[in-house]
Image (cartoon, rainbow, N blue to C red; front, top):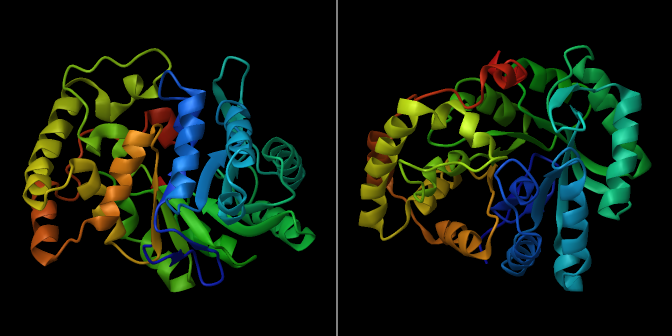
Length: 335
């Protein structure tokens, strides 16, 4: 069994890879509920403990799916599972994102609904998905801290916030982890955000470690995204950007081939190598992809391997922003 990692100074100990469940409900095209639940079961059976979801993923669908997966899992696996939940994003009936609400009353409301949908009396890590520009982060974190005192939440997390906001939040209550995009194609946290987290004893749960499939090694240059797959409008998958990014993948594939690994495994292993305080979230939607991702735990990268990876995908090499302009404007981490 791989060595567990601790999220923050006083946070939970977790398996070194977590399972991101969002794609099982939304934003990546057609979903398969039975396969999704089987994938959660397979992850738990392999030792994965951290399941990441959000109350706005499929407008509650994902929390209900996680509930069913946990209810139908063996008791021992269910007892080891930890839930990480994001809240605050507002959705329309049509599925559009229409804002963020971080008011204390809203925090309490979101939490009540999530506990009901998940079928539990507590959430292990609770975090606002994006900072509400109209509500000081201190007020939002303070409301979560009250939920911790009441026993409804075990730990407080953050999501996509910059170094200054991390400090402000940590001044209110202990923060277990910051969830933020981090991959070979998205290294913005290395300048200020990651050092701040380490100074304050805050862990990182890294999502997008495969850059939404770009670093998965399975995407063809002429891939046509189906309706409902947001990547069809994502800058890194648009026009010439896709080709330039897949050129980077081809360079990385050469490194992977020399290691007897897949591109995805090299990309995940690289994130794992960045520090014991970082836990990558893998967004596998099938048991096959899950098994491939878990294989990254067997990949050992030495100094020569790391240098070769950096040469294949240098910092800042990605073509296109990680979100469209409207979504980028919501990221406190990008300010």
